[in-house]
Length: 315
Image 1 (cartoon, one colour):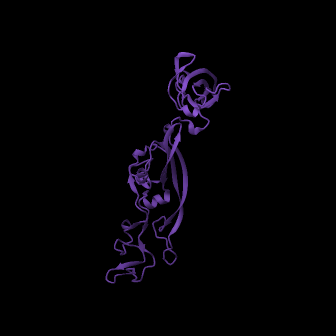
Image 2 (cartoon, rainbow, N blue to C red):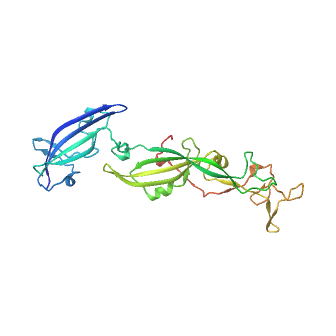
Image 3 (cartoon, helix red, strand yellow):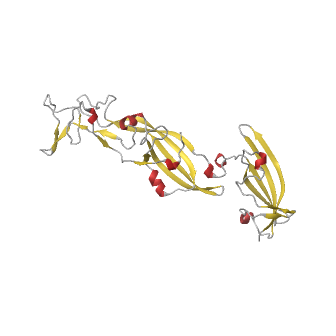
């Protein structure tokens, strides 16, 4: 039970069109002869053995495979891939051992996703989006704490900010859980896309096993976030330091072992406007704003070298 002959019986139905791109199409036909009337294409569709041409023993042909180049592609257009896009088998009405195989070649595909015969040759696809977030702020544009008319602080105030979301889809030949754990929720160790280190967050890193044109691969999706102007001003464009100012109306009294109201040095009365506290919980001189103490409100993100990801140089 096997193929005994593959004959080239015609090359025709050629068509070429030219608008924004040049398109060339061609259909080649073969006669496939087997020695068993129970043979079907599913048994030998991926057979790459060369068989003699029953009409001309000097010629040998194998069954063309999807995504292969046409044998005369270089002569037709050396700069274009003339690839086999589809195969059609038709059984001979009189002899079930004889089949006609029509091979449809084209320099383009109706499905843009199939433009590259090898999915690993597909270029990265970059998409841009925006995410509106609420940012908690405790000071105004002049750096003054936000308080009411009596000088007492409000609960944390929020304002809208926009985060740029860049999604990159790329195919690769491998994907592991260890790789995912390394890059997911990491920040950039080196400057990238014009932003300093720590300024870009890899917020999602996923992969899906796929199969196309005889090639097994992983469709990988990476999502990156770049903080907006409000968040950048608060954190210094650092995803590892989303912080709040340490300020209050009380300070720590080590003798009493308790927090007590902060007393104004001139009026000897408790302050009504929050003042900055140092690492020991004591009031600082308000003129020394550079001594502000911050608390990290986010889990520290890992700084990771993104070089192995082969990200686009510019987005």
